Image (cartoon, rainbow, N blue to C red):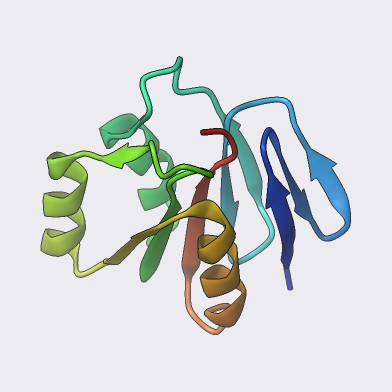
Length: 115
């Protein structure tokens, strides 16, 4: 089982390993981790959601960064609602706690590790 240990500006620690190559990480309940560049647009949009939908999640937790500057698009909100996926948005340090508490589900965290 995967566990997100911590996040700090510019990095995230998962199962004791530090990830710091990109500004966003997708962490799946099964341990798969994908680094994602959003090219400074500070938006969780359809391209990021498409990477997640391939695994049919029950819950998506979006960590919006240290200062909560990452935004979730209305299109993503609408698609999640249509598909019956629970979508949760919160600052990144709270998002990792929620992710770790929901590993009994097909839960995915999209964590913005900057701003």
